Image (tube, rainbow, N blue to C red; front, side):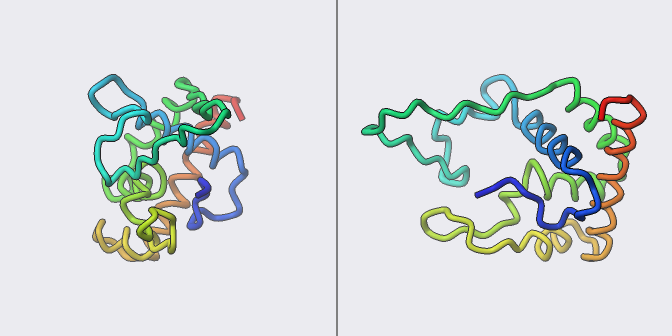
Length: 148
């Protein structure tokens, strides 16, 4: 399963998407007890799959989080209206809640663009518009800081 936002417009540079994924990792990073580290199986909902014991490969390293850059995205996020904040949550840190998986927890179908607007209580058109607006604001925030 790759980390790509299918609903994200292609007109935005790739670095904007990378900043959003950095922010998503930052959102899930935190002290114990929550969120649980990836080595702990808390529940079936988080789709924990133990590492195969017979492999000699070292476990994959976590992608490092750039906290300073995540705080830039967080400052933009906090200024958005609630509905637009929930759109960003649906696309990045909480996207697993809006996708469908088969019995092996493999992504079988992306229904986020249909399910998320209904759960948030907005139209699909506004969902797309809010996502574009938020990505544009993030891009401008980084350009204003001169850190693109």
